[in-house]
Every structure is written in C-alpha cells, then in structure tokens.
Length: 433
Image 1 (spheres, rainbow, N blue to C red):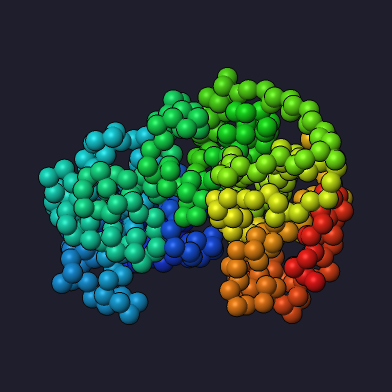
Image 2 (cartoon, one colour; image 1 turned 135 degrees about the vertical axis):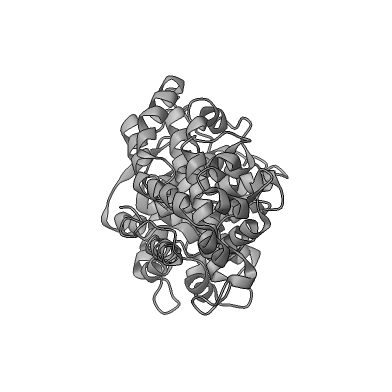
C-alpha cells in the first residue's frame, strides 16, 4: 500500500508535514526504530515514486525556503529542526528511488534530480551540480533524527552518492551483471558491504543475499528464491523475473557431501590447531531454522575433524574462535520467536553427515554452546548466568520461552537434554546444575 496515497500533491508546507508524518508512521509500523535503517525498508511502491515526482514539480520557492533555511524554520513538533528533516527525507527518498529504478547515471544523478524542480526552487536547493548547503544540512538532519543509515556523510559528491545508495542497496542497472559478480564476492561496493555487516547491517538484506547465494550453490530451489524475491523490501516487483533469469544459468547443482570417516573410539584425539578455523565463517547469523540446522552441521563437522566420533565429548572441546563467539552473540539476539515456536511443535529431523539430528537437539546444541562459552569467557561478569542470559541476550518473546524467574524453563531443559543425548555430549547441562 502506498505511503502518500491520501496526501494531496501541492507545494504547501502542510503537504511536507503530512508526508513526514506518514513516513514516521510507516517506519514505526515496520519496526524500524533501531539505529541504522534504510528508506527501502519503508516498502515504497510505484505510486509513492510518482507522488514524489509530482511533489518536486510543484514545490515552490517560498515553501522550500521556510523548510530549509535555519532562520525560517519555526518550531515544529516542539523542535525547530524537524522541518529541515521533513523536506530532507523527502528529497532523499526521491533521489534514492530514482537511482533504484535506473533513471540516473553514476555522475549525472543530481542533475537529473534537480531537473524535477522549478527554476527558482532549483536555484535554492542545488548549486554547481551538487546539493546546496541548506539541502545538505536538511538531509543530514533527516538521517540523524530518523536514524537512517549513512556512509561517510554529506561533505563530498562521493559521500552523498554513497549515503543515497545505502537507502536502496540494489539498483536496476546492477541486476544483469554486477549483482552476480557481487554474490561471488567480486568487486563488492562499500554500500553493499555495509548492508551485509553482521552487526550493523540489515537482516532483511542479509536474508536476500544469502538466499541468492544458496540458490547459485544449489541449496535453494527456484520457488524458494522467488518467494524471497517477491517478499523482499530490496527487490521491486518488476525485478523478480530479471533476477531469476540472470541467476538461473549460473546455478550449480549441490555437491554430494563426502562420506564422514568414522574414527576409532579408542584412538588418540586429533591435536587442536593453535589457531583453529572459524566454525561459522561460511554463513550469516540469521534467526531462523535453516541457520540452526547449518550451524549444527558445522559444529558436527568440526567435531568429526577433531576425532570426537564414538566418544562422549564437550562443546567446550570445539575451542571456537572469538569470531564464532561474536557470531553466536548476534545469533541469539536475532533468534526468531516463530522459529522457536515451530521447533517446540515439530518432531522434524535432518541429516548431518551420517547422523539423524532433531531440530530440537540442534537448537539445544546452539544454545548449549552459547551458554558454555559465555560462562567460560566470563561474559556474565558478577551476574548469575541464568539471570544474565534472560535479561541481556534474547528477544523478550524468546526469553519468555527459555526462562522462568531467572531459571531455565522446562522447554530449555528439554532442548539441552535432547542435544546431550543425540550428540553424545557430557556437559550440556553443567551450567544449569
């Protein structure tokens, strides 16, 4: 549904005020309240883009002056700066949507944007092929007050372009050639790297990216790819067919896993390297069931390499890296309530090498590793471990499933017990007494 559909298009300040209010309402409705989000996550549509273009054409010089210039920005919502944020975010959104749809080039995008405004308004908002200082200040104000993603700021042409591109991620010209290269880690631009950052990036962009990578590697079928593309805020509806047609010829068939060697239960353990490889370095810490399954398979693969087959072993014996622990820290924060509820209601098993593992045991393994490493590293400080985990780590809905009055719930105990039984672990429940 369009954001601006009920707002008359005219050049008045009331139009800007109403549009700003609708942007904030949509951001709140989409839970975009944390620091660092992009305008694409508002789910603007073609109707919104058409509205923005018409608004630019009718914006008059007097209104632009009142909303841009510091001396004219009377108090609005109790703060004199919020007017500047209002006009700034509309110009940012218009510029971002133009780039997204491939209507501008790499160097002429500001010229194309400025051409939408009438001459007198254009002279106030643009200067010498760039944004004018008042407009730059308004966009800076918008990113600060709405807590939008921003690159290196607004002080140079390159920084301005990066900050605008961060709002949409992909553009239509990227799809045919650059997007497949980027998926193969070739010449990935800075704005994509920022969106893929496991801590400060976008969960929804990470999900889109990983699904496309999985499709190329043969782990995801075309129906699943299409479902992700059709629901992603980063993909316009008219792009779905193009993305599928571009990636399909590059798709590989999933390789059959090599049979796991069965080490002798009485033989010596393999010496742990002084600098072990990351267990979770090959994928992103999403909060769904697929990530739990992948991570558990990676744990068991590491256990096999270390010669733990046929013996009772401890999760701490994996000797995970600092990166792995940071990965787990992000994963527990992103663990989805829907995934936890589904695991509680299903008896589903999956194949991990030669073993059949239940999703409950998989989740228990992940949680057990997180808990044991938190204790081993002393991350809870002086806090009792269960109190620390309940209050500091999980989403509230997830925490409510795992804890009761700062103690593990019966469900969490079942998960840890299933992990210990199915994976032949000896200390999954140690921290719970």
